[in-house]
Image 1: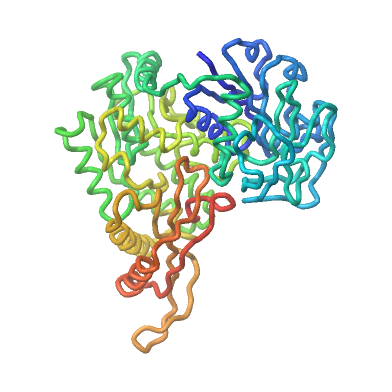
Image 2: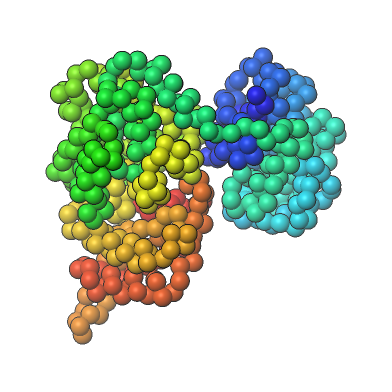
Length: 511
C-alpha cells in the first residue's frame, strides 16, 4: 500500500497534514521525528513530510533528523519548521525573522515548480513563524516569496526536496490542498487508490484484540464523538460495554433530559446505559475557580472520580473508553507539541485508578472523519451532525468563576441563539455556533432605569477539521433578532457582542 509519512516535530497541524493527504485517497500516518531510517526506507513509503513546530533549528535542544534521510531518494516536503530544518541541515542559514508573520499572507511565485503546478502566481497562504531561512543551501532555488519572507518556498527538484515556510494544510491557504495534491501525485507519483471504508472493521478487530472478553465503561456525553465510540465498541464486544452519562450540571438547556431520552431508548440503541447526576460535586469543586486551565483540570479529575464510583458496581470493567479525537490530543500537548489547553479526556488515567487502560478508537480522526464513520455505522443524521459541545461544558463558555446564576444566563442565551439558527436550512448553518458569557459588566438603560449587567458573546465559525476555523458573517437580521431576544428575555444581560476572530490566533471556544 502506498503511503506518505508525516514526521512530527511538534506542530499543531501535524495530523491535519495526514488528514489532507488522506483526502487525496492516499494513506498517510504521523510518526515521531526519531523514526529510524530503516523504517522510512520501506518501499511502500512514497514521500515524507516534515511538519512545523515551536522550536528554533539553530538551538541545541531543538529536534533534528539523521542527515542521511536526505539521501534516501524519497521526495521530501518541509513545512514551516520542517522547511527551516531542511535548509539548516543541508548548509543553509536560519535566523530570527525581522518581522514575525501570523495569519493570512500573500505570496508571489518566483520560478516554475511541480509543487505549484496550476497555482495562481499570487495567492494567499497561512504563515505562523518567528524564524525564517535567510540563505538557501547549495543547489536550492527560491520558488515563492512574501513581503516579509524572501524564501517563502524553495526546492532542489533534482533531489526531490521541497520546502514551504507557510502551511499549505490549513484552510486559510487558499490553494494549499492543490499544492499537497501536486506533492502526492506529481512529485511522489502516488495514485488515488486508498479508501477509508475499511476503518470500521479494522477498529472493531483492534478493539476485540485489546479488550478480549473484559468489560468496558464508555464515557457517553451524547455528542457525535462519544456516540460513534460507543457504537464501534458495542459492535466489537456487545453487552460487555456499559455507557455512562455523567450530568455535570454544565450542559446546554434541556440537554441532560434529551441525552437520557435518546440513548436510553432501547429501540434505537442497544447499549447498557447508565445516567448519574454529579452536578453538585462538579459545581462545588469549581467554586471560586476562574483560570480556564484549572477549570478544565478540575472537571477532568471529577469525571474520572465519577467513573471510578460507577466502576465499583461493575468490578469486571477493566477499560475506560472515551470519544477523544485528534484536535483534543494535539491541543493538550501531544508528543512534542505545545499545550494549548487541557481537554478533560486527555492525559491518561491517574496512577491510583484500577483500570487496565483506555480505549480511544477515534484518537487520530478529525470531526468530519468521525461523522463519516458515524454514517457508515448507520447512526441517524441528527446525531451525526449534532452541534459540537465541549466535554467541560459551559464551564469554559463562562469567563471567570462558574456560578448557578451564570450557568442559567448562558443556557438561556445559548438556547435563544440555537432557536434562531435552527430556522436556517441545514446546509446554511455554521459548523459550530454558541453563546458564551463574558466577565464584563457594563452600564445600560432598560425601562428608563440604569442597569449594570453582563455582556453575552455570540460565536459562529466554519471549519471541517476543528484545528482551524473562520468566523461566519451571519445575516444582520439574525444577529439583530438574537441580540434583541437575549437582552429582553435573559435576566442579567444588557449587551450582546459578536466574536469575529479566526482560529488561529484564537481557539474556537471562548474561555
